[in-house]
Structure formats: structure tokens, C-alpha cells
Image 1 (cartoon, helix red, strand yellow):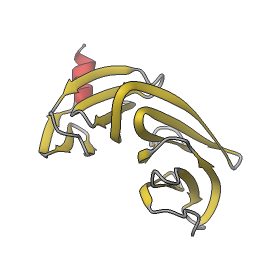
Image 2: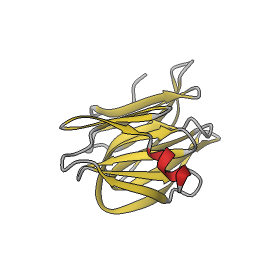
Image 3: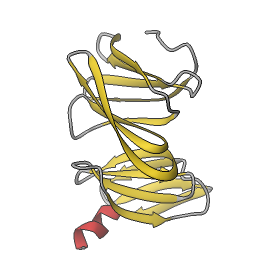
Image 4: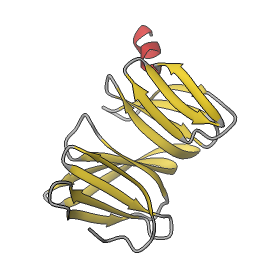
Length: 163
């Protein structure tokens, strides 16, 4: 299993695929068959990628986050297609799918954004910290994140459901 010429920045596994992305010098994206360890598709972007996440909701879909954009990717017939969702002025550092069909995104500014995964529209924003949110982990009733220290938040999706 080799393709990237630079260091791997992030990778994620799910639904029979492993997705790896290289550092900002290369900006390459590779989708691997996780059972055969062979490359299914490759692509490059012009933009730095900070994190990749494979969708638990849609087969052969994954996303990448970087400077002010989320890229939603689809693997179809060994080809990669993507479209951009812009979150102006924010450096997106990490992302985590959460129950109910939502996506939590941690930003350099300490802002936590929650988007629905149907239309990728922002449904909730919380200024959690003044420090960068560097990691997110989702549990059924909690979102755990790091921004200088560990934060435990009641699941933001619960707030959305209550209106």
C-alpha cells in the first residue's frame, strides 16, 4: 500500500474503505479497499486538508476539512467526485459524524459548528473556547473535544431537537 510521496496527514476507515490524505505539500487523497489493500481511486486538491472522515450514513462517501471549507467526496465506479461547502474565514481542524445525521466541526478559533448531513447547512454554532478545537469524539449523548483541555458537552444535537 503506497501512493503518497509526503507524510500522511489523516486517515479514516469505514464501510470497507480506508481513506488517506497527505500533507499540505502534496494534498493527495487516496481511497483504499480495506480488505484487499489496493487503491480504488486517487485525487489531488489545491487546498490543505487537516482531517478526513468516512461517512457512517452513506456508503462510499467521506469528507475532508481544511481552510474555510468542507469537501464532501463520493467514490463511484473507481472515480472520486467532490463538492465544496464553504465556512468563510474559519480554519477547520477536525470533524466527527454524530448521531441523527449531523456533523460536528472543530475550528481554529474555538468555534464548534454542527451541520446537517442532508444539505450540509449549519444548524448550530457554539464558541466553546478561545483555543483551537483539535479533536472531536462523539458518543450517543455526549461530544468530547479538546481545546487546550478536554471538554464534555451534552450532545449538541439534543439542543437542535428541542428547537
